[in-house]
Length: 318
Image 1: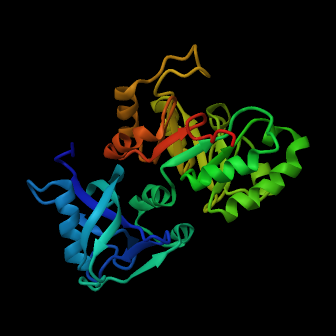
Image 2: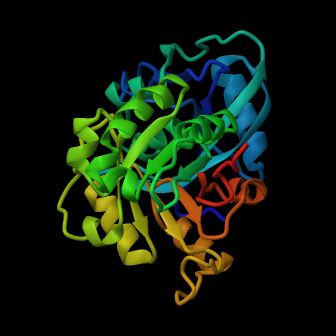
Image 3: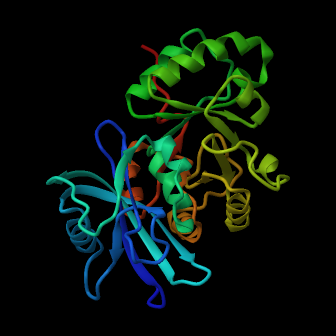
């Protein structure tokens, strides 16, 4: 529920089938005019979130929304401006031809290009969420076999377009040739590939970013890689989430949500605790620990980015 002391703003990340995303400038005559934002506006009293979103896009862009889902929700306090509750949706289907009804400028951008625009300060986590899919595959912590690349390519085709490589495939120098052969093929297929725990290796092989376990992130004071490279952190509680925010992480994994065989001695967060922690951070959150694609609709309903998983997203052998 929105805090009545804050302006409840609904906004849309309009996403075309080719993956390009719409961004618009603040109209002339408004505060911070000319800076970039995602279209939307203030929710009216008694108006539902979806109805408000549809009304705002009709008023601003002359389009009728047909399909969308919650993407991310966060709060932001401007230095000399309003305190806002940003309620952002990913919109994937609409009718009509876009018009700049308020004198704004708009254009379509590749997701990575969004990081180069002068967005309003509150939009940094939204840009990150807009760039990320809802499935984050974490590879098994076992030596890679000869079929690994094919299995990863199949995972990409099934929607796991963000991949974290971990274990012997990144730790053991004997697998470097496989790593170098694998990476461009995955990227050409549309995946972004992160290296677990080693920012230097990520830079060396031209990976798309790095994911740090908490024990490594805890000793940092800032991002280990510059944007647009992605930076993720594994978190388990509120203190760790706050530190990940302070580091400038693009996203976090949060868990374990459920009991898993890989962590038999760790008590799971459970759904209620997980959702409360996720709601308190400004970052995109992937639920990890016993999650499957069947959990996605409920997670989306709560503005959770998606799931991170090993077993449920790792394709079985042919």
